[in-house]
Image 1 (cartoon, rainbow, N blue to C red):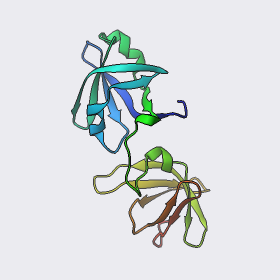
Image 2: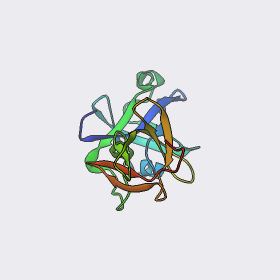
Image 3: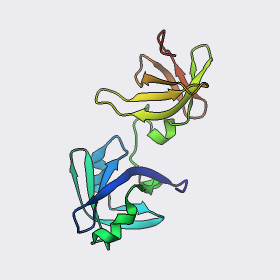
Image 4: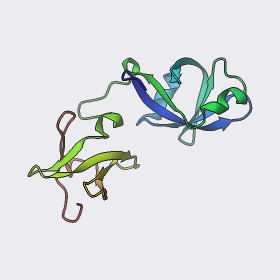
Length: 164
């Protein structure tokens, strides 16, 4: 992945014999695929000829890839878009790639761990944080626990007793 590209999904499998790919979206808004005109795959910008969304998965037909044998090598690969084409976020919203890797501290500036993943939950996202001993802790990404997010300096948390 180049620095000007963003992951938006992972190809899970093919679908049918006509080259359709089944994609697990990696985005907070699956509907963004409805207006997407291209994807980047293996450094190739490929036009989308058709798309549909079903059961939280995206099915894409790619121009020039109309046979299952042409898309089988894509299975398991990530798809990207150019950063210039990303959606605009409201203040206080972040892309997952911006939060993953951030260091987390408590309100007394004690290091708690590093965000290794974000779990999407119907109610709210959950930060998966790995501490120095490699133990994993889960923190709801809500105002009750998140004091501040600074993309340069990390996240300040207000954890409850027993969370870490």
